[in-house]
Amino acid sequence: MAGDVKKVVLAYSGGLDTSVILRWIQEEYGAEVVAYTADVGQGEETEEAREKALATGAVEAICEDLTKEFVEDYVFPAFRASALYEGYYLLGTSLARPVISKGLVRAAVATGADAIAHGATGKGNDQVRFELSAYALKPDIKVIAPWREWDLKGRADCVAYAEAHGIPVPVTPEKPYSMDANLLHISYEGGVLEDPWTGPPKGMFRMTVDPEEAPDTPEFVTVGFESGNPVSVNGVALPPVALLEELNAIGGRHGVGRIDIVENRFVGMKSRGVYETPGGTIIYHAHRAVESLTLDREVAHLRDELSNRYAEMVYNGFWFAPEREALQHFMDDLQKPVTGEARLKLYKGQATVDGRRSDTHGLYDEATVTFEADDVYHQGDAEGFIRLQSLRLRTFAEKRLGEGE
Image (cartoon, rainbow, N blue to C red):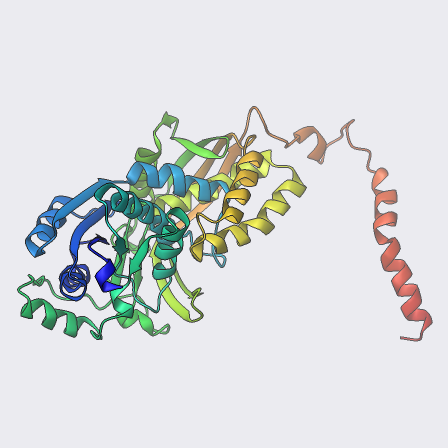
């Protein structure tokens, strides 16, 4: 395969691993390398990465701002589907991989490259997400995954390789865990976190303050929705990226959005992950609060059944698969009436619903549910309803008791 590859587009972060990979591809494949850095809101200096890539031998360095595409075309669709993996995880990393993959493929076509490459390991989910997305977008693309090919075993080997090849090695002390950031969240795993009994190190979190150090006075935030999409914060209309940034800041100062889970990776192993998703957590709870007023009961229950399947599809890397796309159409169709506002109370790491309203699509009828006198609901009707619902239970009980149980 090496002889067939003349140019490779590498997903490049500027860190140790991808810098080593850049040079390794040149040496192992004899190919030119185009470094591709996708900005999905991770806060890193893309210009610094571009300069480092060129200094390391890249023939071209592309830096592309994908934040708008990421939020509008990946994050918000997932929130419309109420996607939550295994009851906790809001899929921050899972949603970023397909948009990066799309950028990689786009760059490969634009530069006439034969292959793309990534720095994901052979144990994780990201290799699956990158490659399934790439093949779905360009079936004939070649993918190079050095961690599955080379004989380097870890950071020490990468440092030695970098020093032997004149690649600058960051002088900052190594963190006792790995970190991946984007506009939706930051994930932490590996190192000291591999022991699920060990708590996260003090000072690890970047987007959120420790709940114990959060303000002693709660803050209330109101999020407005139109057809399932968040469109305003505290009555001020905001575009998607600015809205998520604002909610990240608000939630972050109250320590909202931290989770610590042991999740089931697609490749078969369990993995401990720690995540912080402040703005996304606010959106998730506010969205469900507005849905509680605007979605029919059976529609809502069916959606919740399918949300788990949707979340699994995204987590496992099937963003561009026909089943996810078909399910997205269903999710988006039922979101049409989800318009209204929800008010959340933020306090010491918690986000709780304090109020919700929908003036145009609300199905909540106070005249029906009131405990006071009304002319809408005839309570005697419930007797027949209960007798019919209990028919099969009474039949079953009579049969069982008749058999002497």
